[in-house]
Amino acid sequence: MTKKERKQVIRELIGSYDVGQRFSDPDCERFGNTCGYEFEWVKRVSPKQGKAMAVHVYWPTGNYTGSWSWVKSIDGYDQRQNVLNAMRTVSRTGTFADVIKDVCAQCGTSDRLTVDHKTTPFAKIVEIFIREYGEPDIVNIEFGWQLVDPELFLKFHDRIADYQVLCISCNAKKGVGTR
Image (tube, rainbow, N blue to C red; front, side, top):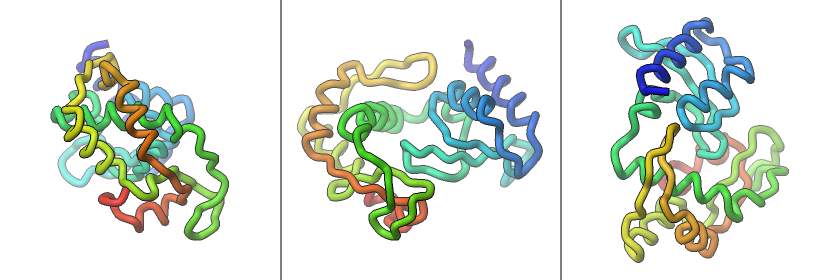
C-alpha cells in the first residue's frame, strides 16, 4: 500500500468517528497497523489548528498517551527518530516482554500499567550503545523501520536494562528524560 493509500485509509477511519469518540477495537487495530504501531486505544479529538483530522492514542509499549501525528508515522520521522523507534521496538522483544504487569510500584494501582526503565532510561541505553557501536543500520519495512541486526542491540539492552511497573499517571510524573 502506498503512503497516499495509507493516508486515505486513516482519513476514512478518523472521519467515521465523532470528536471525543474512541475507535472500536478492530478500527484501533487497523489504525495501528496502518501507522506501524500497536495502540490500546485511539480517540478522535478536535484539531488544534486548521482542518487536520486529529487523534489521541494510548501506546502502552511506548509509554505514551496523547496527540499522535499519524501523517508523520506514515511519512517517517527524521533519521534519528527512525533509529530510536526501531531500537525501542527491538527492546520490547527481550527481557522487557517478560515483565509481569501486576501493580504500580509507586501507588499500588492495577489499572493502566506500563513497563518502565527503572535505573537507566532507554534514551541513555541508546546513547551508550551508539557511542560504543555506532548508529545501527535500519531498513524501511512497509509499516516503519527495523534494525538490520537486532540481536546486537537486544543483547546490549538486556544486559543494562532493569524495569519497574508503573501506572500511566506515575510514569508520566517521572518525566520523559527518565524513561
